[in-house]
Each structure stands twice: as C-alpha cells, then as structure tokens.
Image (cartoon, rainbow, N blue to C red; front, side):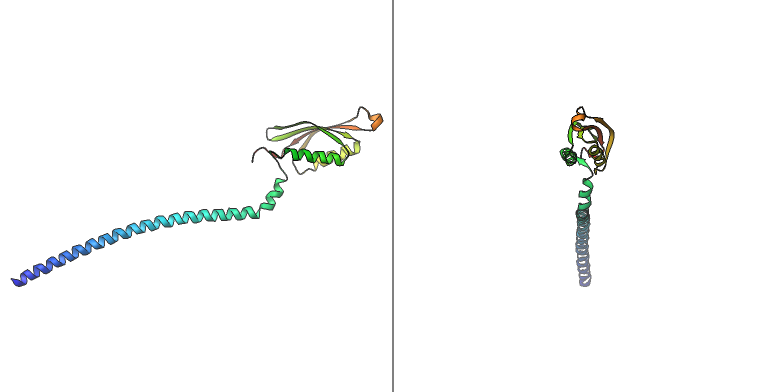
Length: 174
C-alpha cells in the first residue's frame, strides 16, 4: 500500500509538473507570438521610413543635379511677377537701336501675354528690332507688323512700326 501511495503521489507530482510545464510553455509561445507581431510591425514601419528617406535623398540629389538645367530652362519662360523684366528687355533692345518704343497694350489672354507696341526710328533699325524680337528666347509670335512713314518724315526721316506680339511661353501659375 505504501508503494501505491508513493506511486499516486509521484503520478500527481508528475501530472502537476506537466501541467505547470504546459502552462509555462503556453505563456512563452503566446509571448513569442506577441513579440513576433511587434517585430513585424516595427520592421514594416522601418521599411516605410527607409523608403521615404530614399525618396527624399533621390529627389534632393535630382534637384541638385538639375539645378543648372532648370535655371537655363526657366530663362525661356515668363512667369507671374516677371512680366516687367520682359518689357525691360524689349525697351533695352529698342534703346540700343536708337528707337523710341511705346507699349500700348500688355495683358494676359488665356495662357498667353499679348503685347501691342509702337516704335519710331529709321527703317533699318525698325527691321533689326523686328528681327531681334524674333530671336528672343521666348515663344514670341509676331502676329502683325506694320511700317509706315512718320508724320514728320520730311524733317526727321523717321518711320513708325506697329507690332502685335503674342508671347506663348508665359506661365501664369507655377
């Protein structure tokens, strides 16, 4: 009987040990799964942050590498706020050719700028002025040009030139 009691006690101790072992093992498996899920979330977050950082790095590098090209390209467009510099270029060309120029209309129509102006000077310089307008680094369409003898041609040998220009390289918004 004594052996039977000892066997029963041993079996109960072993069953208790197995139950405790299964409980500890279950807790460890549960905890490991939680850590695995946390690791997966962290890995995904880090991958997303790494992708964002790579995008910023590549974009920054591209901006640095293309800065000169973008600056050069911007010279071919007139942007909002820089319309006056375009008019100054036209006035400078006229001044260098000893022409007097008067802007009669300068406005935005749709996505273009429209410029009407008159110039006065000798015919040779008016023709050069027309040619130099064509050579401006903008998409300038000379829609109409009219040359006429000035009212006081006998005294001054002056001609009048009337120009209607459409500038198509205008960027109304950036």
